[in-house]
Length: 61
Image 1 (cartoon, helix red, strand yellow):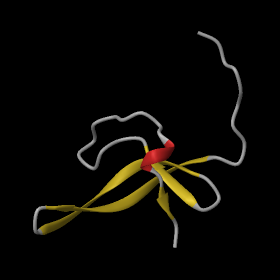
Image 2: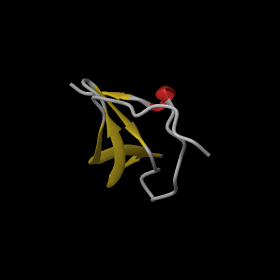
Image 3: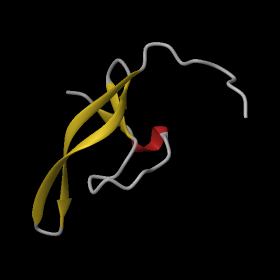
């Protein structure tokens, strides 16, 4: 393995994310990457890891 690039203007944060599960809403602290106006989760609300995908981004209001 080798490092190709270090991304700038990116922060690792823990965000309290709310999800709909059926008729109920649940929230959990979730490890995320934050850019200027988007948050990309690195794990599911129940703690399972997921790949960093820009399709998973959540816009910050």
